[in-house]
Length: 446
Image (cartoon, rainbow, N blue to C red; front, side):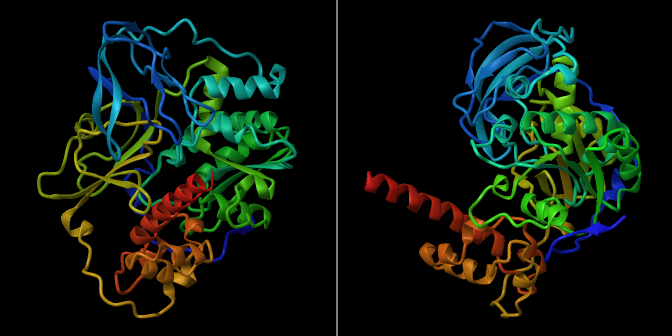
């Protein structure tokens, strides 16, 4: 198997041995779920239930607001007891709070969608949209939007991201090993929705058991090919994955469709398969609970809206001899550090990572050495030191000239920097400020 890759990238310690051989198991259902109405890129959903309402598993409780938005469904059956602000990844958010009656009553709308061969592209997109399916690799972009490219867009390939290059995380790995049929079924559904004849499942070669499992299923379909990727971060980034698999480059400022490709996560594909086969919307997902502070790391199927502290308790809690230094939702490179374990899981909760004080310690930054390492490893071919320097002095116009908006925020530059400069943090701020500037300019020009 030829190993595909891209220019740049880094090789962090992957630390996947905590959970890469641990089979997926279902987490215990919580007594109370706090289901966020904002757990996707785009407009938050509007609650369509009221306090006192009885709801069932899979019932829609939040209506999407606009095309780039996502429906929200109940992950348990029970009673709506509050609609209130609660801790969610990244801050506070409006949540529908449901008391679980533990009856697991399935809503009447949850019905199989029929045989894939008999569904047309519009039906597949409609079912994906109704089910509130979003990118489950962490980005949470509404999947129906990806499956609805602009007219005259020439998409001829679909790529499933099975790289899972983020350190510590193994949810996708275990999914591919234990449920390869749904991964390939979902890929075929995506291809049919886009009228595409070629699909790849791209997997890093440090997951030979996943490659074997997916290949065994994919061999039944001529249009599906499994490709091996070199082990490198961020191998699973959208634009880098497209280049590795097809040799095509996504133009600056453009979406993957401009290169004739659509990229989805293997978890997203498996959820599409589940929705078509059973009718169940996206109400739970596989979450890797890991890190040096967790007594019994695990890969758990967690219900959306579960308080993280309860999930950690199901993994034995924290080790007695280690002080927790940082709690991250996701992986260490692109995950979000949280200030409390009272936050709840959402559709993008691929990981719960707890590391020690020693591991979390960051050295004080020193002056830039002009060594050029950040430029060498940048997978987007940027010069992070110049974007960061202009950002730190508030010159966001110059940061924009250095293509700050093309940064994928992978963190490779910060990882490799010997001076420990706050590169990705300052570039992220520059991107926000540039977008604010451009919105103001657009408003002024109207």
